[in-house]
Amino acid sequence: MLNISKNALLYTGIGLTVVVALYSLRYLFVGADSVDALSETDAFLKYLSGQEGTFWRDFAASQKPLYHLNEFAVVGHISAASVALLAGIIQFIPLIRTEAPLLHRASGYLYAFTAILGLALGAYISFALPMIGGTKTIISNVIGGAIGITFVLIAFVCIRNKQYLKHGQWMLRSYAILSAIVTVYLLIGVFSLLGLEAELGYGLAHMVCFPINIFVAEIIIRKSPSGFFAAAHPG
Image 1 (cartoon, rainbow, N blue to C red):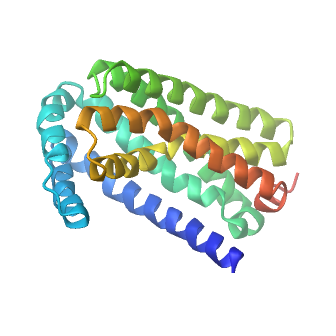
Image 2: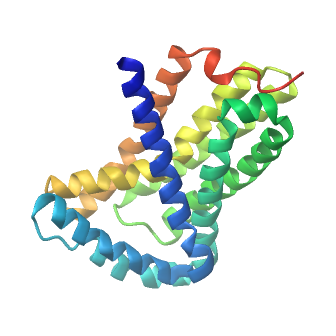
């Protein structure tokens, strides 16, 4: 029963990540105007809570001019991070690691490039816009981006040294940092339902999303020290 619950939670998380990544790729085709679509989230939150809210409509209205001023960086950040989220999922599919090593390696290089690009641009736009939420949001994004890039680089040092288990573990940690883009919007929704003021909720969500994701990643690593990362490379 416990395994069923864990698998259900895992597949729900994967499904949500895929949906968010694919939906976010609209920025690649529509550009900064894509932020307008976030306004629709208010209606969904109203359905859940029964309370009228304007956070996402206000967010889109305030950020759209700033997004246009930094359109290349914004579109690059969101598009690269979205591709990395999808490529990262391929990295952790056991069948691909064991039966399709070339696809595993190719998706790994794609993940590394897009993850580093997405994280670096995310750190940049946090102060270039600047993002709402104030200093705490900016600091959280810069630190999170730096940590995520460091984890990717450590993972590649490990694979060069044929430390396959450690490589997989550091890749998972880097993916945990990257997927905070999903967690942060879930947290903003929760804080909105709890009635927190928009800027406070946005800033708080950015402060806690990285620790939450890393905590989950460390649980996975410790609960499955070898099986989760088994046989990724023939040597």
